[in-house]
Amino acid sequence: MAVKRWAKWFREGREDVQDEARPDRPVTKTTSDNIEQVRLLIDDDPHITIEEWQEQTDLSHGTIHRITTDHLNLKKVTARYIPKDLTDIQRAERVRICKQNLGKFQKRT
View 1 (cartoon, rainbow, N blue to C red):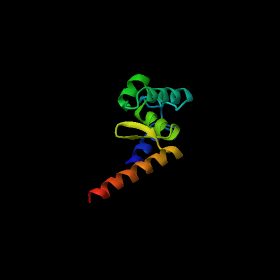
View 2 (cartoon, rainbow, N blue to C red):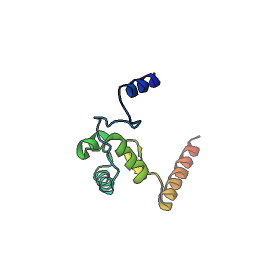
View 3 (cartoon, rainbow, N blue to C red):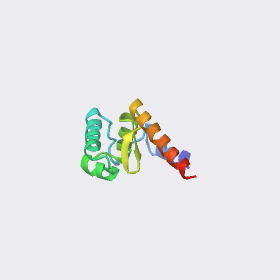
View 4 (cartoon, helix red, strand yellow):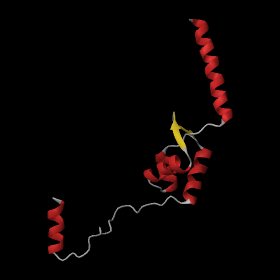
C-alpha cells in the first residue's frame, strides 16, 4: 500500500522523499529547565500525577516520563516517586527492617 501511495505522489510531481511537516503537537525537548521544573514539582509533592504535571508544565506525557526515568532516575512506587538507587544507609535500613519482620514472623510460627 505504501509503495502505491509513494508512486502516486511522485507521478503528481513530488520530488522529495522526506516527510512533510505534520500539524501534530510539536516535539518538546528535554531541556535542563524542564528537568528542573519537574524535579521541583516532585520535591513539592511526591504524590503528583503525570496528568497534574501536564497541566502545570505543558509538557507531554512522554517527555515527563523520560525526564523522571532517564534524567531524574526515579520510578513510581505506590503512587509516589522515589529514587531508583538506594543509598547505603537506605539499603541497610531496609535490611534491618526485613530482618526484624522476619524475626516477628518466625516467632509466630
